[in-house]
Length: 256
Image (tube, rainbow, N blue to C red; front, side, top):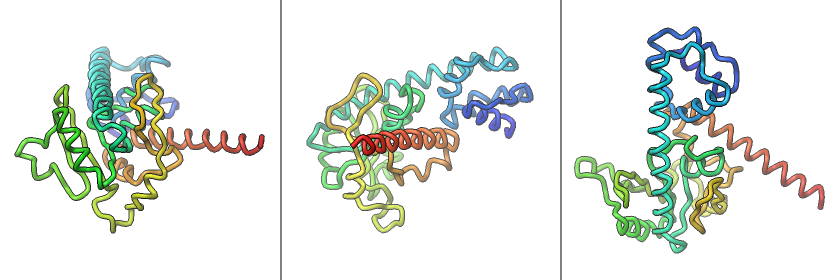
């Protein structure tokens, strides 16, 4: 597994990777491991550009392609559901896009490079009931009774369903479980760090917002534990975007 992870990291970092050293068992687990870490699309794009490893078995490449196309289709469906959700909420319920929905449409060349499993939205605390009702009006509801106890906490609610069915939405009104936790910033301050959503793709819903790229959101603090390689890739993109914004700001100040 160490050889496989090192090879994956090297490929994502555009460095030489020792794919020829992988044993047969590692090749068999590659598609599943890459999906577990959320980097199937990133690896697929890299290999499409530079060529697939010569040592990769044909059946591994076929399995990898299948996971890539399946994951991309799932992500596209979720992004389409995101538009429907934003339209249902409307400008009267301001929201901030969190995590994958924000990163995939702003920092990645194509949104499917940042796969989605669900949609995370932040609403103002005073709007949470109205926002929930708006989502329920388009077919969202609390999960089945078996997990109903986990559906709502004092900081978020999980909804499932939607017009297409099968979509999970987490509606947050706090960034942490408690306002007393050290990583919970002031809500007013946090909203001030947001900017209008400017996705790189052609569709958008007017008035929705995302986190400013120069801001490091506390919500990201749990990512490295579950998806370290996808998290590192996202951090790299945030840093590059922040440096670009800083360079533009310095250039404007210089001309002034």
